[in-house]
Image 1 (cartoon, rainbow, N blue to C red):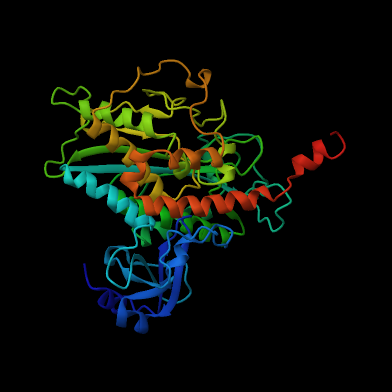
Image 2 (spheres, rainbow, N blue to C red):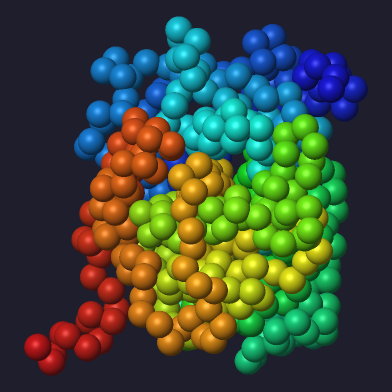
Length: 444
């Protein structure tokens, strides 16, 4: 592509938003005049920035950070430069990779972790293909966290009531916002496929077109930011919380994944006769085996586990089945060249880089080890016991105990990730909920 300075010149860019995704999936960086940014094509940030929690704190466990807590050098990835379509002045945004001063990559950053997994596939002559599906809610502006979220007012002047799965009319209530989302995404080269109304009130789902895992992680990362920005301009909030409303279904990030030959582009999940291959079954078995240990990447917040409940459109175990939406792993009906696995475990609140990396890592371990999956389930997987962690604390402990997954994702990264998430869990434990005041105050 054209160099970044030339691109900025061609688009008459005045400012640059330079950032990287941190462990929680938050964009961290700086906004700079374009002329100054183009002199260096990068920025400096303290290494500790990667370990910032979603609450803005830093964990006491700093083992993953070098003792001097020096600066990281953030280098622009030229393939990620895009316009910021909602900015008042011509503004560019660029995603960066992080390096130490000696040139070594910062191995606890989400983009590095995903690249590490992709390199393992490449060494085998394999190339993963993914397609995320992201669900989210539109809600009325909520400035007091003590109040429950409510659906926003649509074009009709009324808020949505009840459930409107796949309703076109319900979608049309928010046409002006949806048009802005599509326009913003088109200007950022975020390739959207279908848009549907999901089961919850004002819950929507957008599918991204399948492709390279890093490119799709970048798109999912930017898509979440885009939807939130578009909603604000229509006096709404958009939330990717896993379970934002009581008694309503949660929001998922389903991940379709397959593997093709690096040179041939042939789908390795199908044999020449169209039957599922050994690599396909190994991939499924790897997901079944390692998803419980990887759960904290798919359900990274305390709220995430409110989504993982029986009969709530979210899986509770690692069963797999053909076109079975009750299972954690669904195999869609498809032609052999489109054979794929849909990992339905992840919540919309997951960091897309880490969720994709973890899902591919699980499948990779099954493929290289020749694992065999259990029998596909034909009935409802909800009738079977829970097989996934029920809370963040359990999920983090399972990750610590899984050497195979730690070796693939990187042990220094795992130390950093657990430190951040344990700090968040400890902060949550200090909060007394309205449920506790309602039912325990005068009854125990």
